[in-house]
Image (cartoon, rainbow, N blue to C red; front, side, top):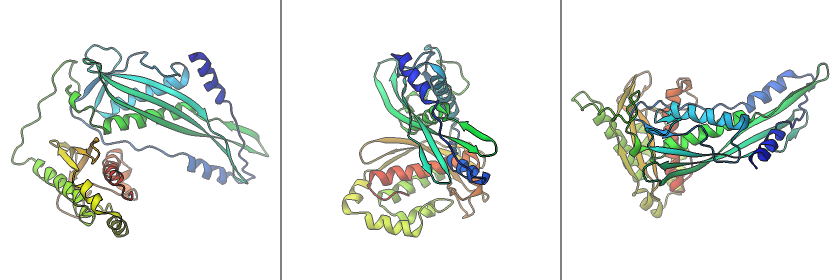
Length: 357
């Protein structure tokens, strides 16, 4: 049954459609630039890790062999390691969690054709995973992902046809990266973060350094508490004062305030924030924040706190946020902590049924 599904998946890769440049090579390049959308990297976590067994044949989905499985497996392992939260293991010894699942579907979407532009065809890879406690057998987390990759082809009257297919491997890697973002963004790993980075398996995590009078922890904690208070009170106009850059513009603040009701305020009052001790990351401090939404769901993220004038031109000590238009955000850590701010605010607004960012 697995081989049959795999053959169907391989067969989909052969689909080809034409894109006519009509003597305008820049038109094809413009379309290519539109299709190639990169995924930013999150800020690197350097604290204790969870040992997770992913096995050599951990896949239990419908596509457990071939190039698409290999691409998903490699991308998942790389994303787990790169997150800093997980040490993925190919042997079960020393692991506290089992990760099971795999690719459940590979499909090719219909082509979209535009006059004088051409046709685009996309491949979608879907997967599901579950995380089990190895000691109790309890399923601690389940989720699914969907990754996509656009394929296209070109031809010109002077050279003939040149075809480029949809890339299943890229779609599988996109799905794996999204899955790991969901996992590390949840609070499920917190009880299992017991392994110090680089330490032997079954070694206890290194104890946190004691706070000193020079520690920035009080400032970081204070800022997060102020953020919690502003969100619980729906004081959106106060949020911007907490960040190194503006997060909500005046028009959005008015829209949010207009959409809020007494019921919204009551729900917002149940928001809870828990702050971990910060760690130094160059010109800023990373602080772990666990926040509980009104429906009881827990999320975990890392925010940055800085007084560095290069990153915080507003002065003082503030939560670091750079807009997508800020050229400094192009670096992976700064993009990651800025996206974490957007994710946190998006979670809160979404849970309160308020307009998004």
